[in-house]
Image (tube, rainbow, N blue to C red; front, side, top):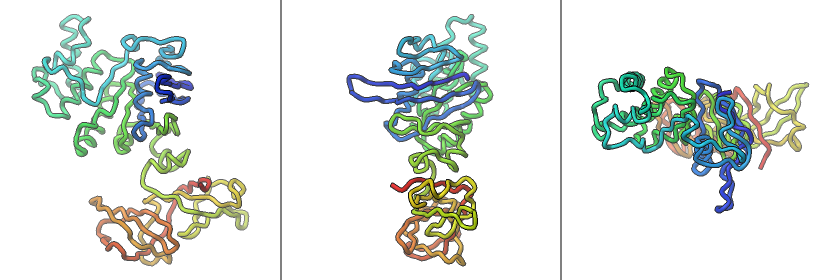
Length: 354
């Protein structure tokens, strides 16, 4: 593996807290990993430990099979061959684009340096702008210059700490897809930190969800969404709710009774004996709930959020349980109205009741 963390912890003795706790994962060469989680979960501290800006308290960090961080060995940041892109871009305001990008290439002969600058400018779609000053560029262009500067020395690993946080939402989504294409074209191995799920899904080959310093799950986006490993991951990724359910066996088959009826696709569901009395909670995503006027189960609309092509409805069942549903936007019902719904769950995900 190109990047490998083994039981890594980072403690701040003066503050009396552990910011990163026993984190292990690996990233293949040329892959893009993403760390996502709420503010204060430890994702930026983890990135800084990989970069060498924080000392490992336990465990180790390996890059290209070399231990670069552990309690006994700490390779200096500048010796790790890591490129970094920050939130504020950190461009030199007194240098033009070409000299910003070439800043880390001073050891190369002038002709080679110019060729490499032109190469990465073409890669990020800014060829011909090498003479511009940073203040003459848009926010998106400045972000590309920062990316080009980080890629120019051909680092072993590229680290990006919420690089789109200062940009507007529409630009962020477009740049997320462009960034993935650029990194893949460059063959770069990258680790990206964000709190935005859409960015994570657009960019990452593999995504890690962090919570209170721990890595809850390290998986592809599909698995995180449909097979969350913990309640936190299930709650953090996507829109959904937990509803009481009962698992039982009927004619040799496992069935799950819910307020919306019996769920059918339970091939990966635990046995009833896995929960006391078979009582559990089922994760119901907004896309698991279908609007169906003929369905026997009715729900009252509590809230509605217009999303263009669809509404996100928050609904309350007669028994008081709340669920969420994506409904095509031409189904424009009033708040307080009762509508028919049914569950169509492809992957039944169950958890112990709190």
